[in-house]
Length: 316
Image (cartoon, rainbow, N blue to C red; front, side):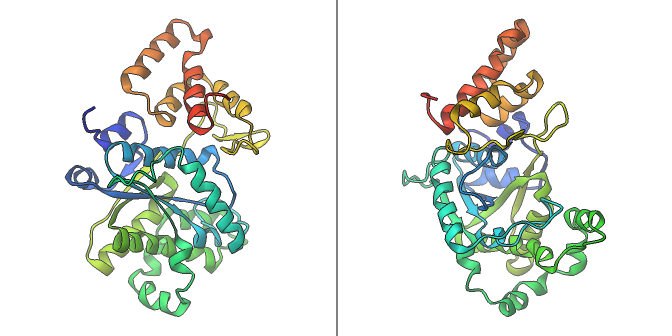
């Protein structure tokens, strides 16, 4: 199997929304470490997390090194680009429990244990933030980024406009700086040059590249993927019963399988590129079968089988 070009791979899969100039050159030059942040507020991933995880999976298949960052410190605060309300905060014992559970799930997608040069690693930003004093942080990091720069981000502007009555707490405002610092920390300690995430993360990610430039004179990169939508305009990943979880105790493998089996033809054609590692040829063949006899739903069946087997097992 020839070397996969990671950017080209994401492009044909419809997984690139925005990319910083120079990213592809960096990836073509050498094995590159890249990270995706995962929020640890529950003890299971849900299918909303899968796009970021599949980006890491494709990255590793292309010979690069994935870093999964559990946002323990930032999960205690809440990200303004995600929601219009502040989120529930968790304590350390819950955080550690959740981290262990998430690691077990991530091991189904990523190779952590082979000892290969590009074996994945799992880090938690709580580990480097918990002993960092507030005074030291605002002195070391805060002085490099202006409030004007932070206010210009879409996530902040939207949040301020949406909640004119409630406003936005200073805690939430600081989130961008903390996420930026994570990127700086991973750049310095793990040689991480790339952060990936959903398109709503662009502002937070570019704050990180800016910190790296200002504090280190270094160059770092960003790739965001489009937010996953459904053809009918409703939110992806939610059912009447709430989230679709990877933990069989929260969402049974049967229900999980059914979720994918029941997506529309249009969505199935899009999702099979994102949520499986089937090749372009394999997918084209399934699309032909689908066009010939949509009633047989070959795309949905294969999508449901691939992803359920990846998350659970063939025994579903």
